[in-house]
Length: 486
Image (cartoon, rainbow, N blue to C red; front, side, top):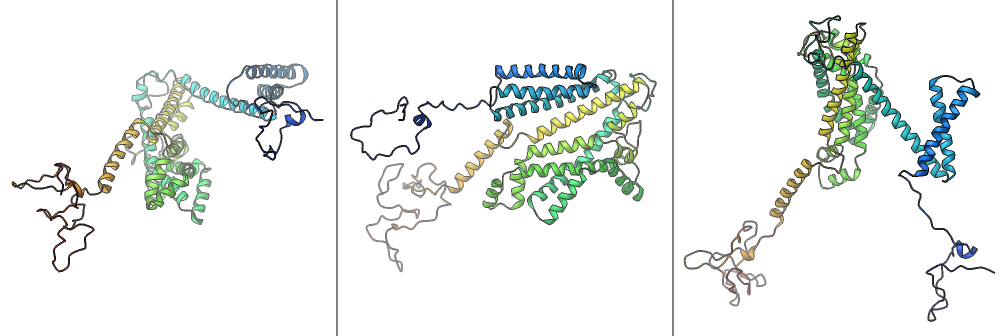
């Protein structure tokens, strides 16, 4: 005997007029067969903070700390701060997984544990970055408040001079000149190579991609030695900022190419296919579709290459030399950069020189931040997102295109082009009647339905006579200005 539970809202009795062979549910529910009402499916909450989740995190953290204290202090002969923190973290993850498993299923446990791992990794990286920036700024706090630190060089200052004498103006100018030269060489070459690798596949492109990936691991001293051997030894040029810019560009070029290639691969293929389907050549598709779509990612690629090149020391030392004086000519004379100045400052035993070194490092980080902001402004937002200026520019272009399309595709207004002329010779046609007169072909004096006259014969008499100006109207048309029938 089967017990059947009728669910709420289900019809208990079939209608009398219903056929006996009416289609029934092919698979009855489990609640109908077993007599137990099935619980509704409740979707699992993915994000957000819950009370049980917060208590589980803090409880697992406290338990992990207690486990590490017991292992390192009582139960096992463990020692070391690094091992202690690793033990605390592993015990925390295990206990948190157990506490989460008391309320959730296995999929939810894995999701919660991986969320905690990712949050902790992000927090660790942020803490490390904050510590580096804060420590550098704290150690350079003695040199940064002095204005001469940014406006003077070290030509007239020595290691024993106070911080009120000397500065890093020569290093700041040298860094800006070198990175400007490197960017001038790297950005067009890097983006062009990335477009080639992305748009023209083949054996040679695969070979170039392999070489680029191998050059990303090129030691900086090798790039400096190459430029030193070719530019200085073989060609006989002197050490200068131009040679240092060449060496830095060799380090930046593979980074920019590799990052830009990855970004260009993310451009949807449907965009390029739509552009080529409209008849655009390949170069126009790349210039107007591919590059604007990947603009923000290309700016990030340039930022990565700049951050790699601006912090190089050994190539600059080999190719630009070292000087304590300000030199603004990159083609002659030695030139120094901020990383090289930091290296020479901090190796001195004098506290004032060490303070200058940390102050120069803080200025270098601020310079990288400024370049990052400039690149973000140039790069704009991601695909599909526009700022106010870009939206206004797009709206103006749309209005111009709409006007141009209307002028090209609006049919000629032949019915309103001409009107009856009075005795004075003035036309009675309405205002704006001849706007598209030149675009409309001339019409014959006869009706479109009447056959053309042969050998100079006139049109049938039932048709209206042609007006004086040579244009004609069909029978029954009415002049919109005067309302007269013709």
